[in-house]
Length: 134
Image (tube, rainbow, N blue to C red; front, side, top):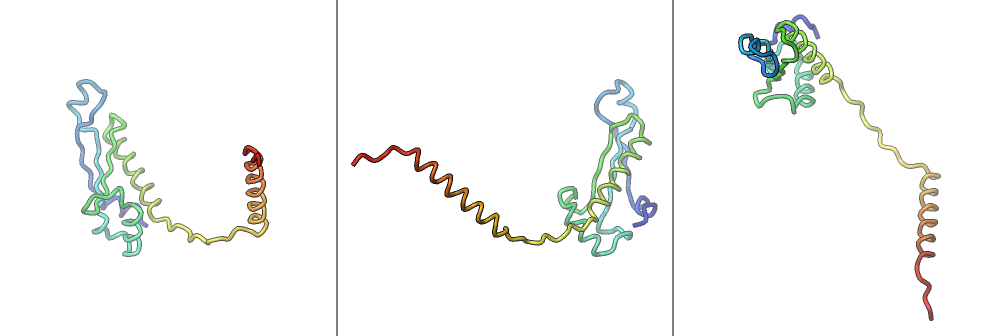
């Protein structure tokens, strides 16, 4: 994964940010929106695209575009740096292949201990009952 080429594939849009800032917030477009078209990306192989589609399914739009926004700072450049950093973290996390789970069986001693514990609990509960008067 070449980070420089990947960053060149990103599209940015600056909009007016909400929140505190007074008159400044009404004049300056400091909020950054990042758009990344996963399907048309030349940087990833088909296997990587399938993996990213599977892992990032909740973050993608219907057109498989990853949309991130950042309006934490009052500076447009700082917001752009933050959103790029967040994008790279998301992509690296999305490319991680999870380990296969190996199913295991409980040990014989744990099965025996569980059975003994059940018998003890059952006996305790029997002792709590009222005695039968016959």
